Amino acid sequence: MTFEEARAQFPVFERLAYLNAGTNGPLARATVEAMIEQERADLEQGRGGGAYFERALALRDDVRAKLAGLVGVPPENMALATSTTNGCNIVLAATGLPLLVDGAQSAGAIPVDASRFDFYAFSCQKWLCGPDGSGGLAVADPDALGIAAPSYLSQESYEPDGEFTARAGAQRFDPGWTPPPVLAGLAAALDAAPERRYERAAETAASCRELLAERFEIVTAPAQGTLVTFVADGDTAELAKRLFEEGVVVRDVPGLGWIRVSCGWWTSDDDVARLVAALGP
Image (cartoon, rainbow, N blue to C red; front, side):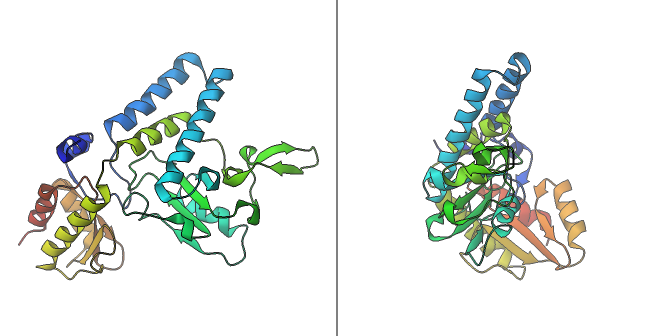
């Protein structure tokens, strides 16, 4: 798949220079179509019965394995969270002094080896371009972490007095039922990423940084990720609003006078040029 073919999966690029995956990544056609297909099946066939739950559980297993492979851990060490914050809270509500990594701006943006950490929490709606309400939590030693907020999916079996036997592995920390359309969309999004996505994102971020540095003070250090933040004059909220009206999506950082640009593998030279031109002389 060429860069142009991979980029064509995202209709938003036909209208906008979308440079805000640090908040929410763009959605590909296949992601939304997978969600719609699952929603249609739920509409026509109902959300019950053996086939429905078999499909839902199979989707959970599929997504768990794909997320685990993405960050370099076995599937049994991956919990399905709803966000980075949710993943962090699972750990903070039940731990001593672990090494917990907030991976919100790394999973899908740069190569990650989460096996080096006690816990690695990440969201999937950012650089992985997945649906809202999707995320993951890699847990190095599931048996060593207490279950502070058990869900139905945490339990292998339970007693009337509240005692329960935890499921094996990190799935005991799954915070609850993930809607199958979200799982279907996330599976499609994870399958859509092209080869060299990390290299291309790094190259684009470096190019963007170099161009902006000709006129602005850059806050982020070179080669530290795919976010490029610079100091802008005046009201940055108003600037971000004006840029959006001109077809360029970025984020202002409130209170600091900064504008944050997110450069994904999908970002083209034209997107960066459009940003620079919209910033004016």
